Length: 166
Ligand SMILES: Cc1cc2nc3c(=O)[nH]c(=O)nc-3n(C[C@H](O)[C@H](O)[C@H](O)COP(=O)(O)O)c2cc1C
Image (cartoon, rainbow, N blue to C red; front, side, top):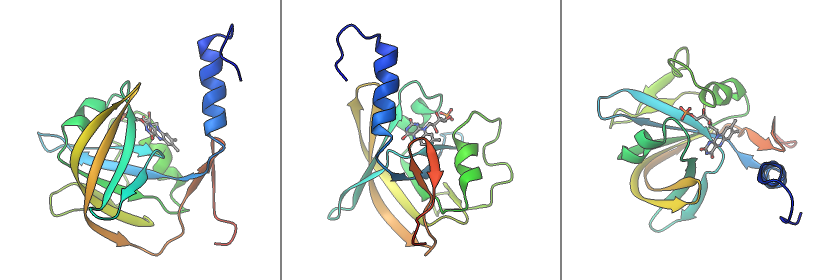
């Protein structure tokens, strides 16, 4: 699609739809505020960056209500959702007075929530933040990780899916 003479909102919607043909997994990134309260958000921009050192990234809309809290967090847990956690993804993708209500969880040694029933868990130390247009890119180093041997939840074309071979 060419950008000339087409309203920006139409281009943004078309671009979002086009980018959405790329299938991803789904994560919920959790962290703790300076006062100890937990927060979390559904994220599919997660990507691995480096094995040595073990680095991963995710990007967050600057307009997201939890953006500033995440930008202050020193530790984040990346909970890679399993195929039967669509409800958890939906919960953390919308404003809610207590997103963790009714969601089974434990805690990392640092206290950050670890969601139960996930495909994998990465406990990370935040190493940097980068400006990424209307998003902030959070770069994190993995401190510990666990593969729970469950099939992952997939997101593609705006809908959830499961692996055909699962
Ligand atoms: C499958 C899925 C993936 C998402 N990925 C991202 C993402 O990578 N970055 C982002 O900023 N928001 C993403 N969102 C939107 C946020 O989850 C949503 O805006 C959430 O309400 C933000 O939480 P907050 O209101 O507590 O800040 C995604 C939503 C869904 C359903």
